[in-house]
Structure formats: structure tokens, C-alpha cells
Image 1: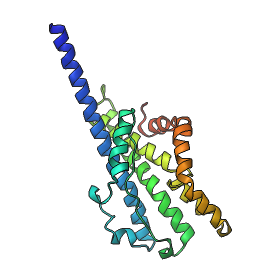
Image 2: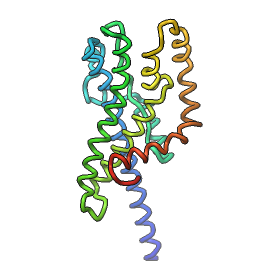
Image 3: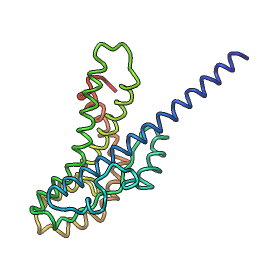
Image 4: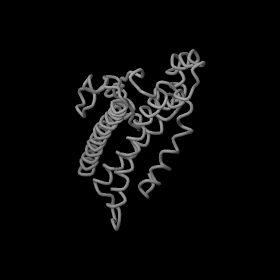
Length: 221
């Protein structure tokens, strides 16, 4: 009887830990995608387009950025599948307000992934500091590891050149004007290509994530 009780208690504790880790990963994801979108907005504002600022999007207030599907439903479903993924409401910008449209679109697009890589780098350095001479993984290191992993995934995934991901905007920023119609078609069917990529190609690219994690933190995933 005592053994069964201990087993039940242990099972409940494990379930509670799993729930807490799921909640933690979703919270980290939400703020990571918010910073991603804010970075787009700040870059656009810096380059002369105040759209994001006028819409009140240059804030860390989650209510301004949360997308019901991308920030709540998808993260919950993906967390149950063993990983956490999602997005926030995209920050809008008006390309006609940019002095140099091509360069501006490129810089606005790259700002999002760079913000995620920046977050990963900062917390990766902190992990290196806390792991120096440590004999066990501390709660902070575990927390920081989630931040690093989630932000690496966001950066790598968003750099894929398929609409509506940032990588497609980086690619299209250099596309000559005469290919405008091809660009429209590419953007129109981009979500279908993105879905195909997620299902069939992401597994081939996913090993990049632990490699970058080890590079930044000095420890394996």
C-alpha cells in the first residue's frame, strides 16, 4: 500500500512539473515573439515609418500583440507534442514611408530574427557564467535554457525564405521590380509552402537548433 501511495504521489508531482514547464515555455514563447514583432516595429519607426508606433505596437504589453490562435492555441497544442511554437500578431509597416524601400524592407525583416538571436546569446552567456564550477543544473540555468532554445527555433524558422516568414522578405527585398507579379504569386501561395515545409522539411533542419545551442551555451541540449 505504501509503495502504491508513493508511486501515486510521484506521478502527481511529475504531472505538476510537466504542467509548470508547459506554462513556463508558453510564457517565454509569448514574450519572445512579442520582442520579435516589436523589433520589426522599432526598425520601421527608425527608418521613417511610424505605423507601428501610431498603432501602439511598440510596447511589451501582451494585450497589444497576442494572437488568439498563434499565441495561445498553437503553443498549447505544440507543447503537448513535445515542443513549443507560436507567433504574435504581425507588426504592420508602410513601405512607401521608407526612404530606401528595398534596404528598409530588408532591415525591418532581419530585425525580428536578430532580436531572437540576441536574446539567445544574452541568456547563453548567463548559462556559461552560472555553469562555471557548478556541479548541477540550477533552476535559473534550466529557465535560461528554455529561453535560448525557444529563441533559436524562432530565429532559424523565421529565416526560412517562405512567405509569410521573415526569410521570404529578405529574399524578395532583392528581387528586381520586373518580377513583381512573381512576388505576388509567391506571397499568395506562401502559407501552403510554409505548411509543407513544417511537415516535411523542418525535421531535416531541426539539428541546427542543438548545434547553435551548444555553440552559445557551451553545453549540449
